[in-house]
Amino acid sequence: MSHRKCVYPGTFDPFTMGHLDILCRASKIFDHVTVGLLVNIKKTPVFSLEERARLIEESARGAGLGNFSVTSFNGLLVDFCREQGAGVIIRGLRAVSDYEYELQIAAMNRRLAPEVETLCMMTDAQYAYLSSSIVREIGSYGGSLKGMIPPETEEYISERLLKK
Image (cartoon, rainbow, N blue to C red; front, side, top):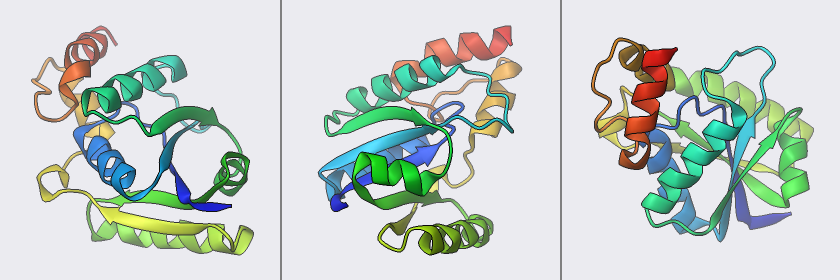
């Protein structure tokens, strides 16, 4: 298990500037960041798994990142970390309300896999209001997503949300 590799998990439906902020910062700290695309049977994403992977890759490459990969998984996050050889889970926080939820999840992950650490990173204040659900709602009404999602994916996501 390496503390030079981390997993940044989520559904990323769609990948926002807040997500990209955390990915860019994690990529400066770790040798490799695996973006773990969660296949969550409880959620029905707007974007397919393949679309989300492509949008993340385009966004990260557009930001100049090279030390990342995007891999889908289902099941326990700690098992995925073990498969990836990653000793750290990255979680992004926007507000205090996120912290309570993340604290519970981190404690359970620690119980299941004490060798895997959880690192919570505060997103940049300019993205503290931003969530994928807000982006989906604004986009579905034809509102501008400029500055909310990476510029490389803005046209595709905007058109796709209007068609939803």
